[in-house]
Image 1 (cartoon, one colour):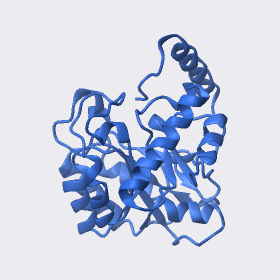
Image 2 (image 1 turned 120 degrees about the horizontal axis):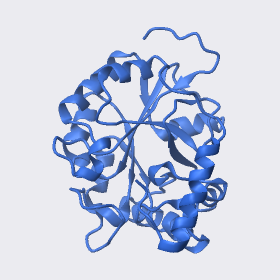
Image 3 (image 1 turned 90 degrees about the horizontal axis):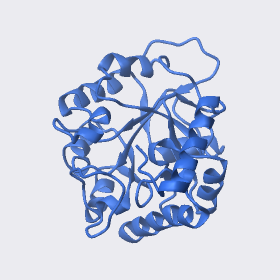
Length: 270
């Protein structure tokens, strides 16, 4: 990996969704073809970075342990059907750990979520992810815009998936990802009160050793991204570095979404 003359260590935290050739239209922008996914993983391995889980990053942010000199974190949101099959196998064959965040309402038979129809894994497959070396976190029940919810609904969206996943896995689940990265100061406080040790946002930025544990920056993979993009991120370039304050457009967009939700009710975060 080529050196980067920066004063703040830059940590790429990659955010994947579906890995499939023919994704539904609604997720197609954020889906990666399996062949391209394999090439991207090979680029990560070739970069010389050491893959770690969100737990390792969070422990370091809290001062509880060191990170390798050049870490990278791979994360997956929602729980698409490829995850416990070919995607997990592609990661395991390269000895790449990952952290997955599951939307329990979308993967539990008989339950509903705000996610449009798509091939999804099932809740019963969750232990299989750990057998492949993946760390499991929560991604709410229904995938709403958390920063638009009233307090009671927010508490449910945070508490229920944690309890469901803990029941299936038999151990604590302490990491959360905000659907589409939507969060606020109140949402971050609620995540901490619900018992999460961290929460991942999006921000499309590189994380760092100064990042915030309840607003971890991630780089969201789109279908248009290439191996060259991965190589740039692995070198610590191509994106801003967190932490940084919300921009005025981000704040304005949040206020608009809250007003809309007050009239129309919970809205899919996507």
